[in-house]
Image (tube, rainbow, N blue to C red; front, side):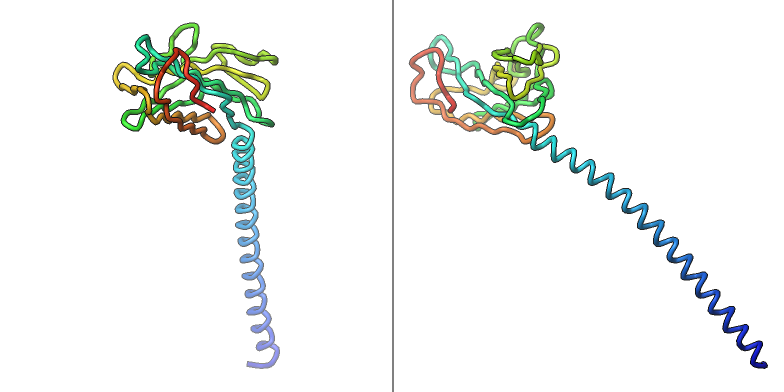
Length: 200
């Protein structure tokens, strides 16, 4: 092989390597662009979820229990709530409430107060303050200026959650977005009147 042919062979080999490097770089760039787009989308979704979590917190103002006629059991809880400072609007109709006494637990959904009564399977809500006119029985939306009362019957037709004296009670409110709220109280030693302050 003369010198010219040898140089040509080396040149073709170098060209092939160069083209291969360009192709590999192009494929790698395409993969990186695709991955960066996916990561960007996921970061946006995560950011929205984080914002919803931070701005959708419920505050419990107070809880009162109503005793039965024999002053031996609490048959309904009145839980007054609002949205935390800086929170956005919260749809109470999407909230789930769990009520337990350490033995049994009921899981309750929202029921339109015009149609249903609280019954241990469904809770209702009553407007106490709503300056922005957000809350209705159908929409049940609140914000930081709202104050509503949740009407919760602990026992359902199939699951008895009895609340005699000296009973530990757990009420867990799980909103559509944001952190759940867990309140644990122990009922007093006696029920001397119809309405019993339980929290705070």
